[in-house]
Length: 185
Image (tube, rainbow, N blue to C red; front, side):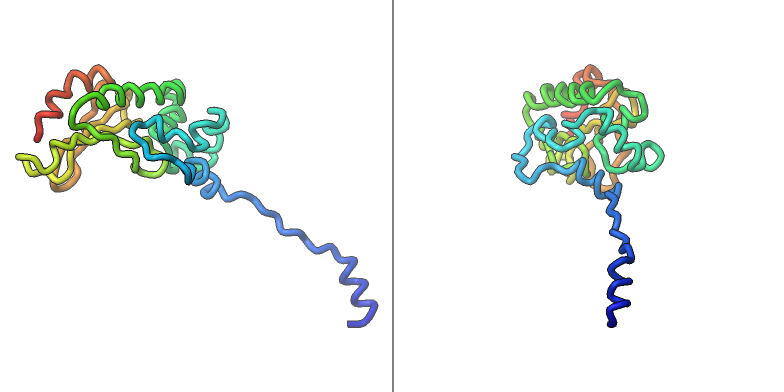
């Protein structure tokens, strides 16, 4: 290379790569639990990711940019409900989860399962309904949902295809029907 070419190539501005966060990656990090997370025995133990601690308006903004209501990314049930403006706040969602935990955590046979789908808040299983007299391989399951305004679904114990969820009318409805749900053994 001669001296003239060397000077020209030094004077030419080389574009610097522009790095932009990928929304999918950013959202995945927002719902990811820290590596140091302790085993969870109730939904409150899972509230360690960014979506649980960051300002609620920032969480909603990122959720909506990541797809939101039209093409929802993995997210806690309460965030989908808040984004659709059917649930007042994240804090109210936490209270609903905590009240279900208070009810089921005191009853024999109910166990909290923390490894739900990405971003979800875990669910409760009634262990006596699994492999009991009825022979079901999947126990009765209670989970929070944004599917309806009672915020609680029950999947009956089953062995084959997953049955349609039973919509429960809030905590009072769950409390009123627990005997029915626990009768399957």
